[in-house]
Length: 386
Image (cartoon, rainbow, N blue to C red; front, side, top):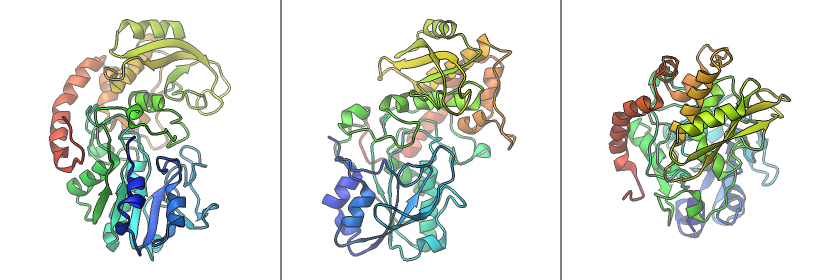
């Protein structure tokens, strides 16, 4: 079994926090290999004092919905003060950091650029740098592994809280490695320490870690969700349901105007490596088309080694657009920037699909940027890539 950073902190690396007043950025996914919350263990630990908790999107204990503001107050279990990093501010203020001698970060990410926890981390690193507070990342495995990179490099003109830095959609690093990359490449002058994983097989997926899966957000209920999320999340930027409000978010997509069998047949005819599609009916209880019957497809990962979620998701978006051109719509929120473009980190992807460019052509265009990114990452990697 892979040994997590939180396990190693309390069992081997306790001198990092001994005699210190601690802040902890975490949520319900911050557990050790025995499913004990890092917040609870630090609160109970002799020789260090947990003085503040910081809650990202979904809150400290995972009780807030997607996009819902997170409140502060006190943690019901430990009594420790809680500060929200997903409300009036997304960065710790000087007042929040008062009395903290070391800041810890322990949240499971999913290896995808548009997951907001990454930027909660980087903004906190910046705040801690300004006040001279050391920052310690308790490392966790990337559930997509550390070998494969996918997608375009984000255009800084499209930077947002679902994509702040020029990295690919699937970046192939642990969260600790990513913190090192953020510090080194984007001038975050924080004193950074990563409590490394032990036994993580970088080429493997989550099952190879031997760890239980704790859903890091409400719509990431299973490892299978994380495996398809890098590509199927792009449906958020369309008028097709991405499966929110169902038991299979991101694994199934659909809309009232789609014919499931027709879509499944068309996608299966592409013979995408490692992927299979079957027609489904579903009725979301929330989000798009709540209470309406939708038809669509569920994507199945038939071979994890061959499956490429970006290609699969974008082929699915392109196919719906091609088969139902009069019904398909790109979503444009009040801010005026397409949801799809924020996820893509560019408008070129949407415009290319509108012009009929193939996903294979898009992938070929990403290759030079991904090669350069892999070279850029090398100084920050902690685990060997063979």
